[in-house]
Image 1 (cartoon, rainbow, N blue to C red):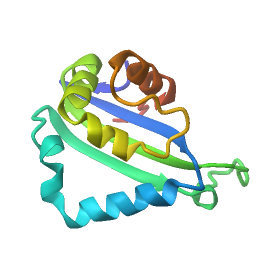
Image 2: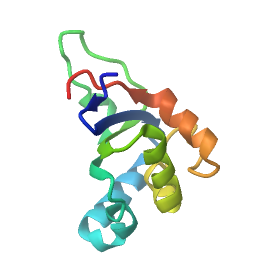
Image 3: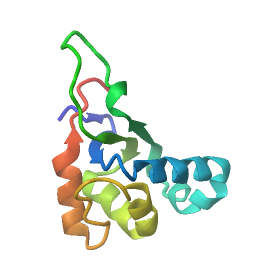
Image 4: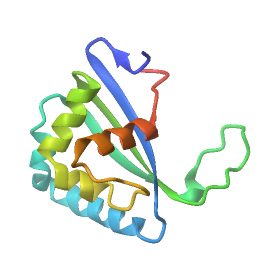
Length: 134
């Protein structure tokens, strides 16, 4: 599997976000950026090397020679590197910071919430993109 390098696993998830309310998510992230102590639950997960959420507006999609894209939604890009299996990571996130996950993916279309875990895992699987270069 291309997502694995040694003991580390790379996860990239791209989820469509409702343009009418995605500004709320950007505001939430600005708040957490100014108050990192509010992220203690996330920071306490020892298996995580890196986690980042990025908001992509329709006009921010790169043109890599394919021509201009017609995109209707904003998108949330989540990138993370961690030790352990995919299931361990999703379980740790869902158990450790369920409210945070629900807050971070608040505006994402068809987001099922982090608990119960099976619909959440299905959502991540559906929106995950393999890492070709790691």
